[in-house]
Image (tube, rainbow, N blue to C red; front, side, top):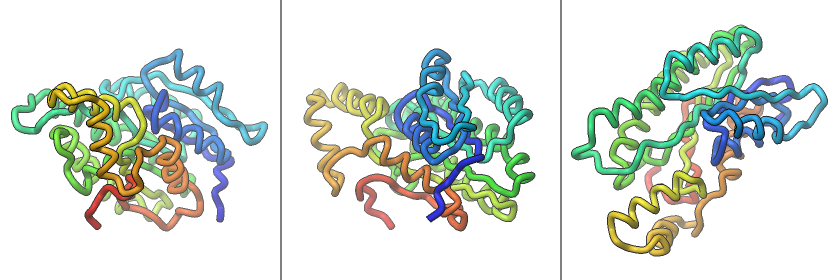
Length: 262
């Protein structure tokens, strides 16, 4: 099975922690040159310096950018690809704050769409021309199992994730003939700062303990535990590998069997 990404350049968003950081490590371990993108410059410097290196020519870098600042994001990534083609794009950003959809402020939807749908669109627009020139590309969007089944208490997030999934499916059809695949990875409950935020919110609103909320969430997962970020990253890395060249336009849950729909 060909998993070798030597000579490919990956741009990984949200790479300062959680699934993004794990994905950056996984891609680097397969030989890719990795540029990590997030907001915290000091953290990114440390991340880039600590990524695996499998060969002497492997080079890692970083971009400090805010996904919600669309025009600045576009300019920074266009500057990157002007000097070096990005063959792999991992679109990944922190989810919108928890809360019901009824009564949600319009501004919350606008912010979520900008940070997820519009940022993904801008980033893809910047990197696809280089992928087309090389006849090879991978775009993986880290979304949520809410694409399959809406999650209670995540109204704005559910709405935004579906929009991203629809955009990705359309894009996959349009760019497939150039050797570019577009897929979505749908994490379930994963041991990241995001899941801690969700647990804290549920505990605060219900008056129950964090331990009760945690146990309740784990009970919904057939495997019986939360995922580790590295497990989700493994799925992302596979979809980026040469071995996955004929997989495009799919939504892949990585959720321990929690999603009940087909």
